[in-house]
Image (cartoon, rainbow, N blue to C red; front, side, top):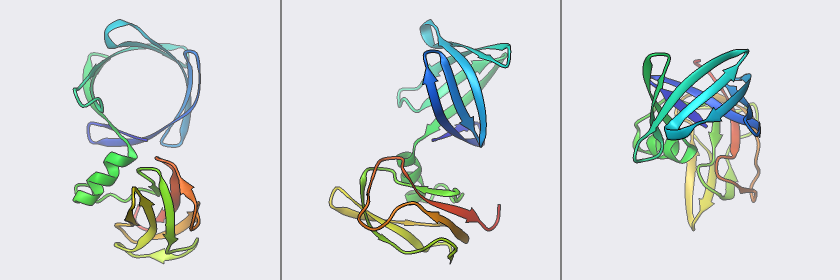
Length: 170
C-alpha cells in the first residue's frame, strides 16, 4: 500500500507481525519495530533502542489521519489500490508507479505486453473482468515491461501486483 505524508508518498509493506513485534518495509528498506497501541489513539514505538510516541486522530473517512509526534503534526493518508485506481481514472494523479496493481478481485481477460516490451503512455497492458465489467489497465508514461506476473484466465485478488515496470524517466 502507499501512504501519503504531506507531499511525500511512501510504499509501505507489512512483512510480518507477531504480537507487538512488527517488520515493515518502507520504500524498499526493512524495519523491525515494537509497537504498542494505548488508549485514545496513542502509540508507543520502539526502534533501534529508541522510543517514539505518536497520537493518531482518525478522520471520518477512516483513510486519513492527523498524526502528532515529536512536537509536530502530520497529515497522513492511506492510499489503497482502489483509491489510487479511481484517482488515476479521474486524472488526478499522473505519476506512474513501478507496478500495476489490481484494485479489486477479478479475472484476467487479456495481457497486451510481455517482459522487455517498451510501451508508450496510454497503452493498455492488462484487461481485468470484475463484476461483469471489463477494465483496461494502462500506463500513463513511457516505460518498459519488467515482468508480467499474471496470464490470461488467472483469477486475481484485490491489491495483487500484476505487472512490474521499469520507468524510463525516474
